Length: 570
Image (cartoon, rainbow, N blue to C red; front, side, top):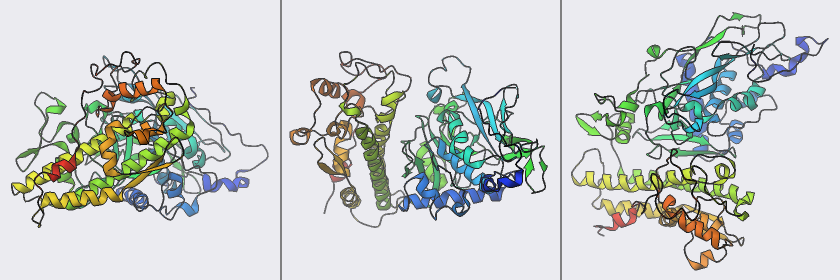
């Protein structure tokens, strides 16, 4: 018998189960053997309600949202819940919490391994050919007297048991640690085709408004996870995501979420519906014992590999050669996604689109403020700079993993690139009379520029410099310096925010060595693609320019103001 996690709470002798009434609210009683379509719809509504609260700034942490009126179940919560979930935990936490409150079965992958193919090595979070499930953890009430069994299904199907004061699983213990400590971002790094005994927790979905819905998970192969909470009539997808400090933020889906090799599982996926089999009801109506199984792919109406290979796959099976075709026209993946997610024929109001994109960028900037502040409060910027960079700046451990911001900054750069690309596309499509673009004015460039400037000025944020003074900036100033913002946690606040003028830099205490590192890292700051398989552990003397797969010579164009001013007339 193998023990994967140690969970042992002994039932004190001489006390009956009835005397443990304080635990009743914590009991996870499974009263339904499977997730129904109505349960899925109720879960979607639960997530949508939480997401709306984040969007409307009624709450901004996992704890704040789950202990607010946005959570219809909060009044029945027992004491002791931590309400904590980071980005990889959030989908599991929300799904598990909902399952507990609704008497539903739950099971999670407790262990994953890299797929056994050539070259698929390294950090399990960033394997080039993805992972597969090698262990499972079911939430099941115990078979024995006053005993609750948490079953860990592993390759040879041995079991691990934990003895608790109740025969039912303790939901507080499970949510506070067991489930969230078991799950990790590597669990999302799989295509989702596995549906046997070691089934994947999620399955990839067809691109429709019926399958991508509140509660759908978005996986970025660069290691980030988000949960969809809203889809607009014009096909925009909005998500919430959590962070190590337990904050919850909202954002809009765009190319900052990359496509990649299908085995990495990038894109949209839903939780696999679960069924409890072989269980028996007790006198309270709860199910005891049994085993949780996942639905087979051929029973899932929206299971599809379309997002990986296109709706016209490449005959040779090359995922990046597949086409997305709509009404006979080949479009890129992101445009196809929006077309299919629109409620009816897609119509784009370019002015509303500009406003949405700039507001989303503002959210990303404000998120960065808090992330950098966490690093500065730790004092890491006061330490000497290490002699070398990490093996890979995008995926590492220790202080760099905790306080550096290369991945976050890369997403921000891609969002600015997308703003320019989408703006250019809307202008060009309007010029050729594309009926998708709905604009009734006579100066589209000028109107777009006015909205950009209005929203940019409204997006104000600030940082505290090394002398304790608040420096206030707006979004346009952030755009102008985004490729100068240091991702390196050993730099002063001024360099973290891309200060260039001598006046703003005057308060930075960084010595000549740190300034030299800042200058040498500019090649990496110009890079907007996150490469996890490239060697980056260079010394200062070695970092003399772009290296193979590392850094680029010049930053890409993100100057939306210059584009809109060209040809603008008033």
